[in-house]
Image (cartoon, rainbow, N blue to C red; front, side, top):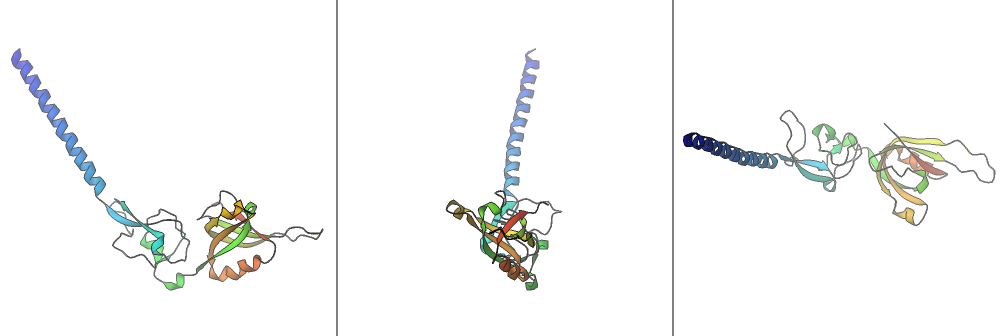
Length: 200
């Protein structure tokens, strides 16, 4: 009887020891996997198509990507000065298919315009694509022209709402094709600019 109990105790000891060493091995394996991976370039904030990437736009992040995932830019590769080929989101890992070295694709310009705080949605944010309309207010009973669509697919670069605390205007920085700059500036000379969100 004592031999049977002794064997059972030994079996329990062996099982307990195996479980203990397995847990230690698993913790080392998890620690190793968490430390493995490479550093990749990610964007601090959204960037529009057709602009040059600056050092201030970038951060490094560590990630473990699958073997079948290709094209993402590691820290060993120089992406500063590359030109974006599409609108990119903040926090997005850069992929070589989204970048170009062709200077002809550097075709966007950023400019700031002043708009009324009530003429842009409070939910609008950098990275959004919007449509800009020119609207005239009625004065002295004069006929009011129909609103005119100035530009579509306008990329919001920055919204400065601080000035709205002291007045009715805010500063809106947008990025557009350089060929559209004169169109937008011309629309700001009369009436006001209304920002309409483009959903989808």
